[in-house]
Image (cartoon, rainbow, N blue to C red; front, side, top):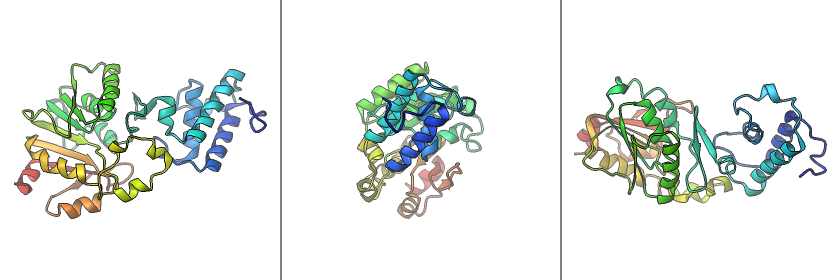
Length: 300
């Protein structure tokens, strides 16, 4: 609905400027697909208008119809009033070129591992077509399991999560990509299918420590806490993954885990493990890789 503040808005450029100003005044928190007010505003405006979310410039001077203006302003207003991640308002999130259905039953996908899977975990995986079994622990929406299936086309992919609600969302995404025959979902606490030995295990587990959980802004508190909280020091699930992974990895398998800002704590907890910290667009402190051979050698 138009107000005195919005009555003179006409074009995409007008609405975009208004949204950025409004988001900045509202002191919103970002980090669920975009990390600043401009990118978030551009995404919401383009989504509302059913325009390609990666092509803003051609449409900047296009005038909105009254119906379009009302819908776009309603979405901008909801982002401010509800302080929800944009993905919960649009019911979608993207990792690279992959779109996923998202709602408040799952954490919003934003894993650095998605970036690494675009390169098929090269150079640590030298023959992607030879990967037969892959596992995604704490799968949430199923996004990394789906990316595993695309990265390794011959692989059978297992995905686990403790939350039945999350697995319902994952099931929808697996179906949307037509991967029901290749991606199997399991409701369990971390590891499942003990008879399988995996060439690749990935995980973006809960890793936020208690102090950080208590300080989370509203947008992050809207996400399921069980998908974020890693216990007092953030390592509750990470410890289990490291300790249990050797029993589930193939002889030449690898373990890839995202740990947020917990690199110092991880290295302190396991000083003898030869962690390889993988380079991502955000830096080299967020995702580690361990080879099965190294894990078995240090955790006997």
